Length: 125
Image (tube, rainbow, N blue to C red; front, top):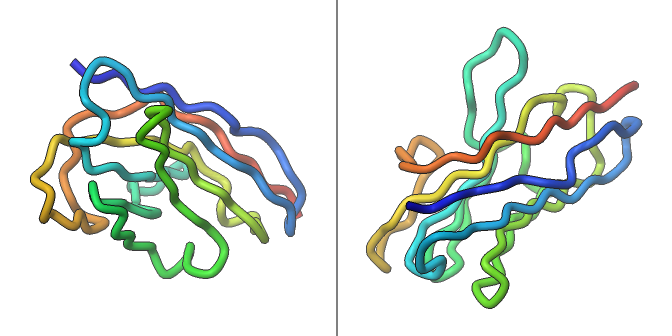
């Protein structure tokens, strides 16, 4: 069973940057589709960015141009570089994984099977 552990959350001022990382263990990482999601208090969880096994990415409109998702199959990690952060980016961020075929390009509504415990990101104005 795959385990996901996020790190790198914290508090920053608007305009600042944070880098989230997700360590993946327990299975063959390269065979997984991956994604980052977030949930703010009182709001539904929303997709931020996803990545296929071959590196194809999809970003939420709110993340385009500011966030970058990347994966390192050698280190079994998934990263999310977040720049130009805004107060509305404040949320709990979750890493997600799902074993998928190589041709699958997971969208923001894709149902991932495994989830991390989350990392809090707080952006102050």
